[in-house]
Length: 175
Image (cartoon, rainbow, N blue to C red; front, side, top):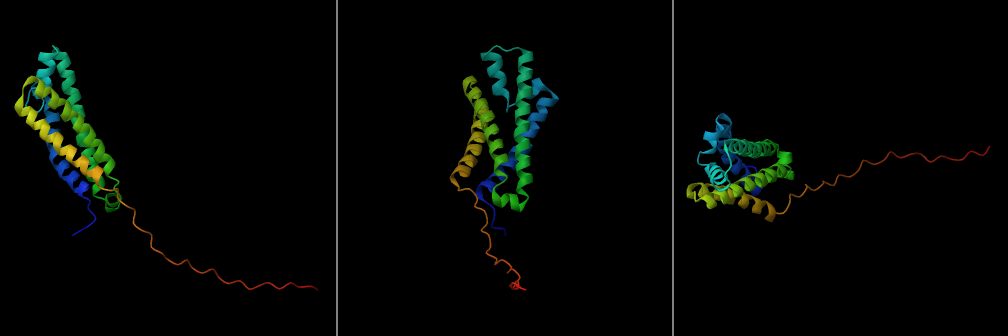
């Protein structure tokens, strides 16, 4: 078993295995039919909040649906990039995949937090639980990334330098 996996990388891989298919399906349902996709459980809080509280029309709701789909697909793309970078042991050991994971966590947390606030405002308890759970999963991974020290570079092996070839001393010729 490989011992060069950091807990943040392993936790990020588990999150990616959840968020990539789930958020991609949600986003593609919005792409397929924006209004119907917006009124499904994961996005219904935004639809109710913007439609009822802010009195937005159908065109505004469709634009918001497309922005939600775009945001979710960006999070999916960064999680997928994280998994691709995680497959290379040299990058994984050095912590090079953490940038993609941190961008995915930041964008995903922002989207989940905004949708959670909208769900609490309109009284959608199921959507509130969903977004709170997703937010807590992403924040937990972010905290793990902050608490763990950064990956240290492997120590260089002391290899003696190859001795220089000896040169014969040159004698001065006076004559």
